Each structure stands twice: as structure tokens, then as C-alpha cells.
Length: 287
Length: 248
Image 1: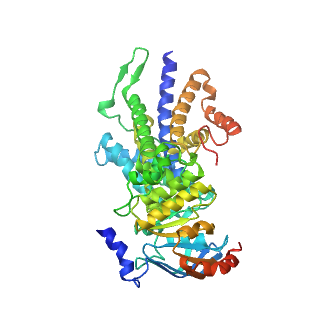
Image 2: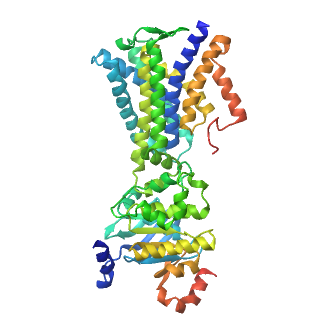
Image 3: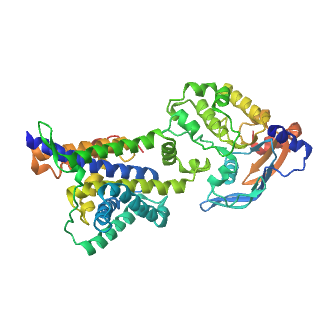
């Protein structure tokens, strides 16, 4: 039983990262119509940013949670202004190729300086140790990651579904020309949206640094699964991508317990099944 | 007080510069040249209607004024400022509001969000109470999904949301298209009331009967050019010509 709970927890942790990353991908896809293959590299940059802050500037984890998403978000906004914006109106393939290329360049640069092995990042003091829940032992940091990710996902959902800014965003996703003709600076909003999605990826990177170590390819390994999550959940939906992210993490964890051989493929098997039955994804709207 | 001044200005100085002056406007959709030199004026407080057959260039003219046609040349002056090169968000913030032919109600927004979407560009827009006074149906449907409304209600919502913004120059693209006579009548009353409150309105219409109940002046658009224009008072004298132009 202990092993089952442990795998469930691992599933929830992975689900947290899937949710944060697929949420960012969904927001970016909705607004920019770009399948952001650079997402994994930007997640990795978030983790490296936390690592540099701690080891070069002596800035701790808590500040890194704020600073890294902002720094990487600004980097993302520069990418959008200088490159991605020129792809608006073109076929998805161009955005996919460009962001894939950007991801390879970023990962290549980091590999060149840091190799492929992991750099350690200490769990902050306040989150060390664990709690005995009676039925299992819960490392505090892992519990924190799950809860904090959930809070961020709900906050992002609230921002998009319940605020005036979110209404601009949803409206501009449907009809950017008309929203602009109402007096809203849509190009600036697109840049900020990309910054937001990228910032979420960087935040996930910081959260993951103490668990998974900081590696140049940490995002490349993760992003493949995240894209499967996005396909299963459906590209357009915010809540859908969050729920699917957590759910698939848990399913993966359960598979590790009941049938470990399939744990690496279960997400992709589910993706194939969803594509056969409902090609727009579980929560996606028909095009 | 300001209301009074606005109403007096055109009467005291009939030669005052028009609110909107369009000269030799040309516009392109991609490679195809749609407008070949459009010329017309709209004065403060007027309702001016662009008439013409399908595909004549009426909608493209409105979109060009709004700045949402990629390539355009010539001159569009709004309140004495050249806006031919301005972006559409800037044009909107100068006080021009656009109600598109397809209405543009957002399906991912409910009625309230649709209504509150366009930001205020100037002081003096209609309050929500005034809007519900004009369109009582909307008040009862505030939490419905925008596109779940009937066609008539969607048209009312599309007009209502631009009245909140404080823009005093409205461009309405075929507001009566596909609607039942009783709703057309309601929209006619709305336009008359907006006019009496000092709004300036540029209207595109296929429904000539409707246009004649609200318009002060007409321009005829054909093949991307304005080929004729006359006041409502000259309407009966121009009826024959009009039938030829519109093919009705």
C-alpha cells in the first residue's frame, strides 16, 4: 500500500508540472495560434535561472519563484517581438518549426556550458523534512509543489475566465481584429500573453529544480509527454488542460504501481485512443 | 452645457469642417483592388447612409475608416486629423465605434462580458441603465452565452456595447440584415434616438426602405466609387435613378 501512495504522489507531482506547462501552451496557442515547442527549453531556463540566482547572486528559492518567471517571461516576450510575431496568419507548421529551432539553440547553448549531467539545487530550509500522514510519509517539498501548482493553475483560470483582462484575452482569441477595433492594443496583449505562458513554464522549472536537478535537457524530456497531455485535453481549454495534466500524472503513477512496464507509454496510448474517438481532445471545441 | 454647444455648432456654422472627410480612398484585399477612389463627408449630428449593391465596397469603406483593411491609400480625416495610417486601436480611441455586419458577438463571453468588452474611450458614454432602457431584452439575458441570443438580440448587443464607450461617431454595417420587421423598427427607433442625442452615424444598408426612415443624406457606392449623393429631401426626385443604381 505504501508503494501505491508513493506512486500516487509522484503522479501528482508530475501532474503538477504537466498542468503548469500545458496551461501555458494552451494560453499561447489560443492567443498566438502557435504550438510553442520552445516551452520545454524555457522551463529548463526557469530552473537554471533559479540555480544562477542561488549560486551566483545568493538569492534564495522564494525570490527565484518570482524573479525566474519574470526574467524568462521577458526573454519570451523578446522572442515574440523579434520573431514569432512575423508568423501570425501563417500555417501552424512555421510556428512549430521556428519554436523547435529556438528550443534546440537554447538547449545547445546550455549543454555547451553545463554538459548533460544534473546540477543539484537544495530544497529550501522551510520545506525540508516530511510529515507522517498516518498512511504514508509525505516529504514537505513535494506536498508544497502540488498545492502551489494547484493554486497557480486556479489563479490563472480565474484571471482568464473571470476578469476583464481575461475577457479581452478570450475575445481576442476569437476575433483579434474586432477587439483591436474597440481600442485595445492587441499586439501588446499577444506579447504579454506569450510572456505569461512562458513565465508559467519557468515557474514550473523553478519548482522542479530541487526535485529533478537542473539539466539542459530536463525540458526536452518532459515536453514530449506534455504535448501528449495537451492533445488529450484539447488545445483551447484552460481548465481542461489543468485537469488533464493532473489526471494524466496520476494515471501514470498508478500505471507505475500496477504495470510498471507500461508507465512510459500509457500517456501515448491514451493519446491515440482520444485521437481515434474525439480528435479535438476531451475538452476541446470543434474547429 | 456641452450637449447644447454640440447641437448648435452645425446650425451656427454650416460650413464647419465635417467630422469625417474621406477623399480618394483606395483599398485592397490582398491583390484585389476593392475601392477605387471613395469621396464623401459626414457632418456632426448627421445620419449618412451608404447605399449600393452587394460587393460595391460599402463594408470595405467602413472597414477602411476603422483601419482594419491591410492596404489603403488616400485621405481619411476624422475631427481634422489624418487617420489613413493609424492603427485600428488608435482610431477607436479617437472616438469612432464600429458595429460589424456579422455582429461579432463573442461566444466565449457572456452577454454582460460582451457588453462591457469595449473599453471607454471618452467620457460621456451611455450608462448601463440607459442601455437597458433602450434594449430591455438585454437586461434579462446578462448571464447567457453571447451567441445564444436571437439574431435580433445579438444585433442589439452589438450596438449597445459601442454606446457605452463614449465614442460619438458610430459606423453601423447593415444593422437590419436578416431581422424581423418588429426588430427592424426597434433598431430604427434606436438610431433616431441616438441622432437626437447628438451621435453622428454612418450607416451601410441594403434595406433602402429602412434607410429612408433614419437617414439625412445618401451616397451611392458602385464598383468601389461613390457615384452619386443626395439629401433625404431630394429623395423623391431621385427615386428613378436610385432604382437603377440598386437594381430594385
